[in-house]
Image (cartoon, helix red, strand yellow):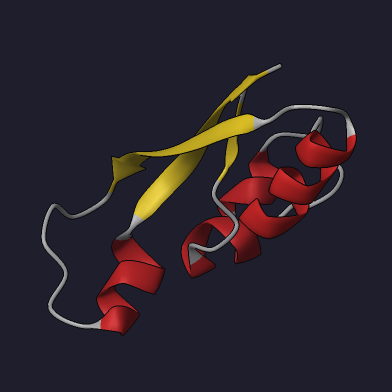
Length: 75
């Protein structure tokens, strides 16, 4: 599945709301725990669509980092 990366400040405060079907912001740790509860054992996260390819600081990563998060989970 794919979801907006709410760890990106720009996404969580602005672009998340562009899509009216987005109801709840789910951080990576919540998604992981939910999938584990549902019986998935191998869970992979892939960060997609960064606004910048290189980050000079942690702030750059929070603002310009990956905008989407793909999750691959196996039972």
